[in-house]
Length: 306
Image (spheres, rainbow, N blue to C red):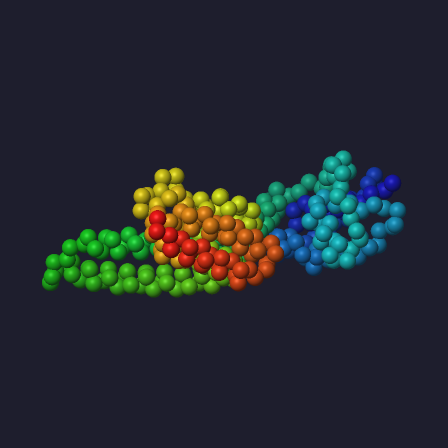
């Protein structure tokens, strides 16, 4: 049985015919930067010119196999010939037939491909919100440090200290305005990506939970007890009360006495686990069910005498 193996090597795809040739080579793009961009996107239209036509022209007695499931999916989506995953033995035989690559060209292509894939990853909604949330948190800490330092700064009137204090105040005002604008952006992105969780715990807390988890998929896999402790410190400070993490900053948490916030955090984490699964898996709108349950639990804890 004759087999055709399709595999990539640098900016090219090679069609190797086993047990013997002739073999064919298809170039993604003569420009290595453009070739890397096409390889990173992994879309059917970014396959090398003429490849699909060549695959359709293969005789019916030739079995087409490829080196990766991603490549098989691109061929199928592009209307090419169906392909199976290549066995290891045939893949080794095909690679042994490839021409030796140019080291300089291969290094340039690999670097460009890594850069293109990184840019593509950073442009995903998850990574955009994570980056914005971490920057907003960093600015909040910086603004807090500046405000505390300003409170301890003693100013002598009619001296250079007074002039410095005035310019320093303007800098803090500009920083606060920048932080407020970034916070607005973070909240908008969180409402778009995690609508149920944002409505339940607040958009800024939802963004920070996502940042702590590392991805929306990872956040959606967390169970309620782990979600409750997400972002907690090993030894939380006494003013934070019972041990729970980022949920201590959830909306309406401050309405309860310190001693009842732990019970509310446990209930809230259970609802948050449902909300984030809806945001990441089913994409159903559960706000009308989850938010009233949160408010009823809050009212119940507020009515307790102890």
